[in-house]
Image 1 (cartoon, rainbow, N blue to C red):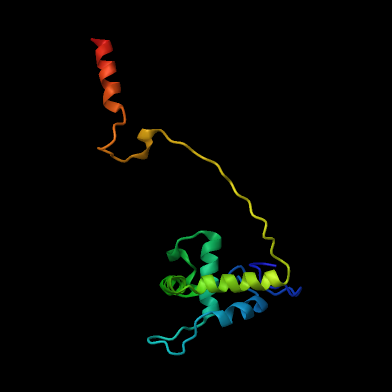
Image 2: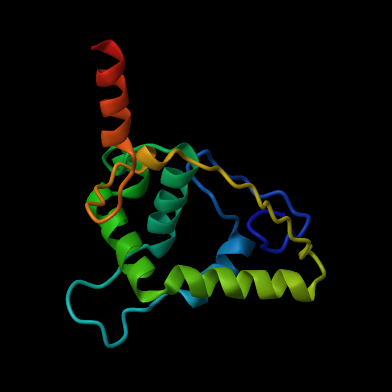
Amino acid sequence: MEFGLPDTGQVSELTRFEALTDEQWAVVEPLLPSNEGRKGRPFTNNRRIVNGIIHRYRTGIPWRALPREQYGPWQTVWKRHRSYARRGVWDHVLSHVISQADTRGEVDWAVSIDATINRAHQHATNTKRPEQDTGGAIELQEISHRGG
C-alpha cells in the first residue's frame, strides 16, 4: 500500500515517472477540481500534472528541472500545485485517503511526543532589546578595569 490508497494486489506496470496506479488514481481523480464553471484555459491531463507534482517532491528537484517530456511545462505543474494548495485540494485529498484507510483498519494512530528543550544564551537571539539590560556593558567595564 502506498499513500494510504488501497492495494488491490495487482501489479501495475509503472514507469519511473508514474506515481499512482490506475486503482489509486481512481480514488484521487474525483477529488480534484473539474473544469465545470471554471474560466480560462481548461485543465488538461490532471494525471500527468499530479504525477509531475509527486515526482518533484519524491526527488527533491527544483520545479524547473521537471522532465518536460513526461509532465509538460514545469510552470503548468507548479501553477496547478500552487492553485490546489491555496484552495485546500491537497488537504481534502489527504483527509479522504486517510479516512478510507482508517475504515479499513490500516492507520495506526499512535503518537510520539518529544518534549526536548533547547536553551540559548541571551545574546544568541540576534534581536535588540533596548528596554532590557543584558549585562553586556557591565562585562566590558569589568574587563577594562582589570587591564588598567
